Image 1 (cartoon, helix red, strand yellow):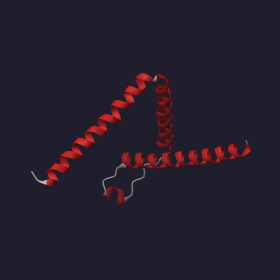
Image 2 (cartoon, helix red, strand yellow; image 1 turned 135 degrees about the horizontal axis):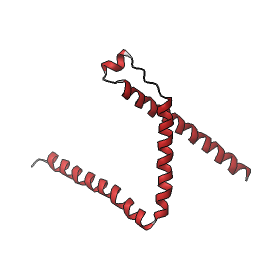
Image 3 (cartoon, helix red, strand yellow; image 1 turned 90 degrees about the vertical axis):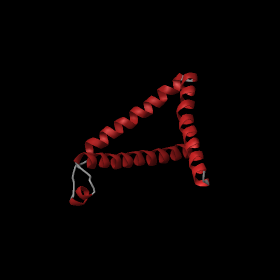
Image 4 (tube, helix red, strand yellow; image 1 turned 120 degrees about the vertical axis):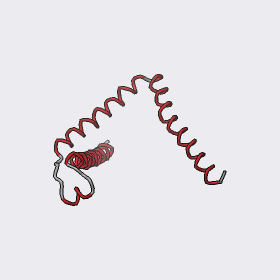
Length: 107
């Protein structure tokens, strides 16, 4: 067995452990603290609503360059929705930072 093979198997093992840890430990935390599940649910629903808004605002234009790369009308709309969602979340973040700094300065 070569050294490269051993390294690949170690990476597989560590990746598996990381995925199991990323799935199992939050489940234990949810069982111990069910109120945290409500907060997580609100966050997921908020992101879903922002995506729905972004999807409804996105266009489905397909240029010649897009078709050569295999991007269709649906893919173009999803890509546009992702970009618009990013812009919305970026603006909300900047407004939140400005609000918190002003609020902190006034106290």
